Image: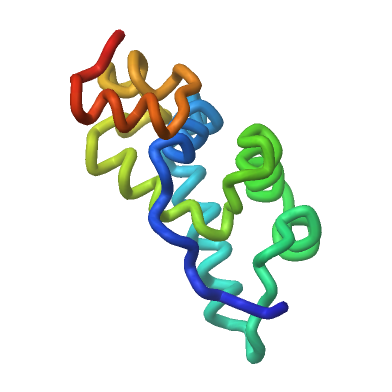
Length: 132
């Protein structure tokens, strides 16, 4: 299957995975990873199958970017495909859950996002406020 269709918007649980996985990673590294992937997606004469990160990470990335992509994929329990990290990245930055030097260092990120939560728990937080 060859597809470049973006997945639906990330869930709150996925955002939590991203915050935990990227904790302490220099903020520039996720941008470098996304740029490297976007360049490959745009420069290929045919569509690339991004559905199997276990395969494409090693085929398409090298060095630190390969390590970071592998970290995102494996430490998220193979739920965050690095090809589609932009939605998570934008959400984290929009809510200021990170800072310029590393991910995430915002106080808002520490209390809520570093704790593993289910979608039901996030839904309850939206209606009742966070239970920290």
